[in-house]
Image (cartoon, rainbow, N blue to C red; front, top):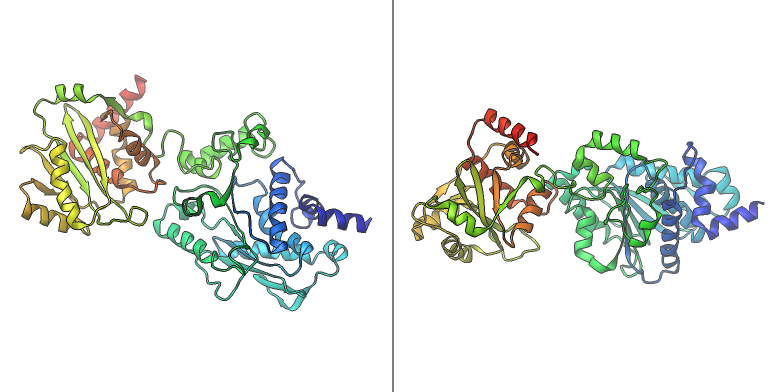
Amino acid sequence: MIQAEREACIESFFEFVQSFWDVVIKEEPVYNWHIPFLCAELQHLSTFIVARSPKPYDLIVNIPPGTTKSTILTVMFPAWLWTQDPTIRIITNSYSADLSIEHAVKSRDIIQSPKYRLLFPDIKLRRDKTAKANYENTSGGSRIASSTGGTITGKHAHVIINDDPLNPTQAASDADRETANNHTKTLSSRKVDKKNTPTILLMQRLHEEDPTGYILKKKGDRIKHICLPAELSPLVQPIELRKNYVGGLLDPVRLDREVLAEAKIDLGSLGYAGQFGQSPFADGGNIIKKDWFRYINRDTFERMRRNEPIVFFADTAYTEKADENDPSGIIATCKIGFDLYITRVSKFYLEFPELIKEFPLWVGRNGYTPSSSVRIEPKANGLSVIQTLQRNTSLNITRTVTPKDDKKTRLTAESPKIECGRVYLISDVWNDEFIGEVCGFPNAAHDEYVDLLAYACNYHLTESVKGDENLKRAATYFR
């Protein structure tokens, strides 16, 4: 009986999970289809780890909370790997030291449990190295728990497991996302052999430039991406897994419609999209919704405009490297009656001299007249752009007022004007890029158009808050 269970656990990671479930989880297990699927995927990858052969890929798994993801991958998988080869060295990581240690301790609880010692008596922890965060066995295998932003100098592993390197609160911070991405990069250097050591990233999608986005952008087709949102959507990957959804749900027992409805209320549309939908963008948009914008063709706009001037807003930066720094953004706008019309938008990845040359040409092509103005915020390099254009061109260059509030606050304040249908876009090829960035904020990779839209709304649409609220109620009524 003991030998049969031992062999079953060695031959199947899913069998191991079932055998040792009650060691770390006291609740009755619910083995939804995704659990044996993930176990099989990890077991396949383990064959390369054990053989020390070139890895087939690195693995990313995006899946909602409450799906046993950490228990399978970060708690049980390391303990099972030692049944395959007790010399394997493992590094695990999470966004906080407490969480990393908690996972490591649960793995250690399995290894020190009476059942594990009975089935695998040859795997023993060293008495002198049994700390909560770092421990080794007598065959040379080790488990090292790190946390995002922490140091792991001098440590190397045969497999790296990065479980939730960024939490939902941190995802809104540029600095925290950068820390998580840099730590992910650091982990990639902690390998016994770069060709052989796979990295496994497990997390929800929280931002376009979260660690999932960072790795997908850097490594492309060298990644196997498993994406399992709570509800059936085109984001499900691999696509053949879509047939496993029951009634459109990933896990109809633990994540049924009632549970998901409550999560939407608790998290809001944006939080729900990231944690349960595995998308950094809420359906239709985050703060700004796609269907709030109206469209008009250019010929109709020109007939309506008559002599109304075009006003330009610019957010400047200098760079030639599109993959490293922010671009300069510019939009052309016009107010007709009570509405704002955005006639053209563009971005430039240019160094300072080329940027100064391009500005007069771009505004000239897009409706600049003596009645126009070019409004630039005098922040950072914006001041240099303002001074140089004022000195070397005849453009009417104006400094905008440096805002006191952050971008999210400013866009939220202007959103009622957009929701009321007072912002029109001239139908053109740039619409999709503009809509994607504005509606994706604050989880889009760039936000130049967000700043410029907020400036334009504030400048052109200056009615009182009461007036905006009345318009908003009217727009809602007539929908």
